[in-house]
Amino acid sequence: MYKNKIVGSLIGLAVGDALGAPYEFKKPSYEVSSHFVEGGAHSISIGEWTDDTSMALCLAQSLIENNGFNAKDQMDKYVSWEEDGYFSTRSQCFDIGNTVARALSTYRRTKEPFSGITGDANSGNGSLMRLAPIVLLYYKDINKLIKYASLSSKTTHKSQLAVDACIYYAQLIAGAVKGYSKEKLLSNEFIDIQDIRKEVLNVINGSYKEDKVYKPTGYVIDTLETALMAFYRFNSFEDGLLHVISLGYDTDTVGAVYGQLAGAFYGYKAIPHKWSLLLMKHDMIYDVAINLYQTEVKETKEHQLKDKIHILVGDITSINADVVVNAANYSLLGSGGGVDGAIHKAGGKEILKECEFLRKHDYPDGLPTGEAVITTAGNMKVKYIIHTVGPQYLYDINPSVHLQSCYKKSFLLAERYKCKSIAFPFIATGAYAYPKKKLLQLLIK
Image 1 (cartoon, rainbow, N blue to C red):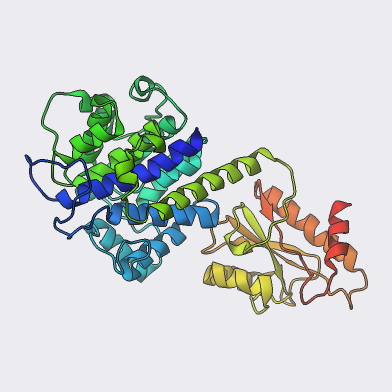
Image 2 (image 1 turned 135 degrees about the vertical axis):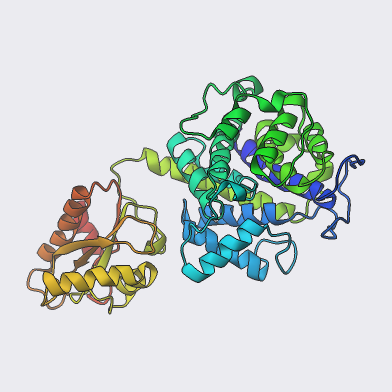
């Protein structure tokens, strides 16, 4: 069931975007074709989608590659889309929103991943339109869902209205993935509405059920209300989507926002074949959705296996943990290669600055073998870095004792700083030549 709904949400987003794209900026009334058409302000081809889907795919791919949320990586991927057409239907970006463009410009200059624009005047729908991947990874954990729905908006949209709209809509899509009835979804009985702005609360309380003229502009509240109106009034993915697109204005985005929820609710199999068949790069989007589904399954299993040791092959600088252990050399200055060099490179100057402070005030002769210290993680997504110096196997008098000390003191530091997960490299098994087999035997003991 979950796979059908997860794929349905991401494909639904892209279908809604592609069906609405040729009608963008039009004012009602006009006739909407039940098939993909060409043309419009961006000379759209049959089944072609725009920035809504491109940004959603960038977000999804970041979640997959990092096995979780990494704001910097998300922004790097958005920049690659803007500059090089990454995850676009064309060789270059097109149809980029003003708020997104400003945020990416700020990020390039400052390297601050949460470069979103603040203030109600900047309450666009650019973070709501790409929201689905966050939900499809975190729909089983309400706390993470709310946290990352908020943070995913703040990379480009820090307006509280935009953030709150994402928090609310994320909970709706999550409920749809879980198989809730439409009545339950729209009853708000499971929605966390703490500290939500009154404009969003008004929508939650049913403003989308009113008999009035709906105008889906780029304003996030207009988009949210219109998408929910169609989901409430119609009983099929197709009928609701055709209706929101008939209302004009920001048709691709209201189609994408509606498609995320309706696709999750009705499922991939309920999306008309005439659309999925002709959706540009359908197979690529489908594969991203499947990879996201598998990432969700992997994360859930790892969460269930508490107090276990996992041996992973990969880049420790992108690992999903509270703290990462650095196999440092005695200088603490990032002058080593391997793990030490990679962590200092990924973490940046903040780590080096703290290490220099430790050298000056606590360890003027360098960090002794078997000792461990803790610093900031800088640009890395973990909370802390623990630096420990392993023994040189061929020259150390008691290499196993010192290596045990590295692990023991790292665990004690992690516990002191209330870290629930810790990632170790194979300490001292590189240039320091400690045999990996002996290390594993030591750890098992």
